[in-house]
Amino acid sequence: MLGSAEESLNDQGADDIWRVMAEYGEWNRKGAVLSDVTTHMEYGVTRDFIVEGIHPTNFEYREGAVWGNPHLRVLRRQLEIYIAEKLGAEHLMGKKAQV
Image (cartoon, rainbow, N blue to C red; front, side, top):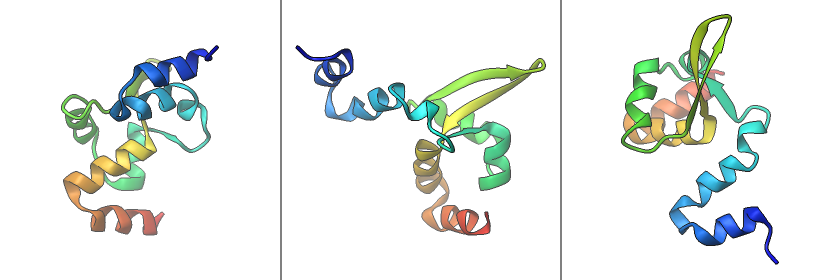
């Protein structure tokens, strides 16, 4: 008998496996999740840039609020792929080298 995670993987297509994997642990891994403020500091992208990527690419995100201030949380891996597609790999590598 398969576990629920394995059953979910079997029910999903190959393109959706990353979503299932994110659901089962990537959101809890240290350093894997960034807020929209941190993405601005580390990669030089704005909240608007992230919001533009959320809808057409099915970018995973979570909404949160700290002391009444709303923020978005995104997965670093998916953000880096999106930045490389939109702004180029050179931009991504330059920003990663600065940090």
